[in-house]
Amino acid sequence: MTKALVTAHIKGFPKEQQADLNALRALIGDALPEAKEIIKYGIPTFAINGVPIIGFSGYKKNNSLFPYSGSVASKLEKELAGYAQTKGSIHIPHGKPFPKPLLNKLLKVKFLELKERGITLD
Image (cartoon, rainbow, N blue to C red):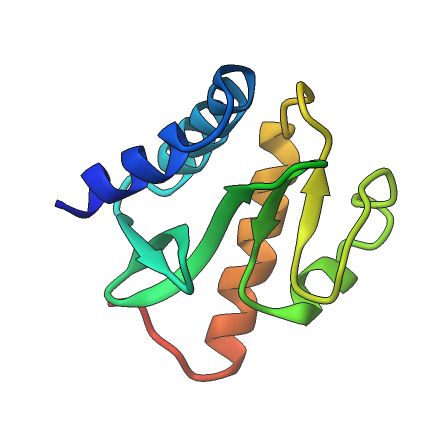
């Protein structure tokens, strides 16, 4: 049921942006095959055992990734230098795919942070 909600969320955007968001969804899904798709804070999110790992959504000027931690992106400052950011989001220009190696680094930092905080995903 939640996958249907994520699909409905994406269908609310213009066709070109839907393609970007579906590509981002597939990229994250490939990196996190054990994760469930949920809606968290109003955006599509991949969660493992109820723990939100990363979210994504579209906006008028960009698409965004949400690692649900302000410190994850700061630990990849050099790698993310080409992306506009807020404390909790990484902005991806429309029509520009997010690189798989960079997503993998982002997720690695996220998992290390969860481990440091004593959050287990088992």
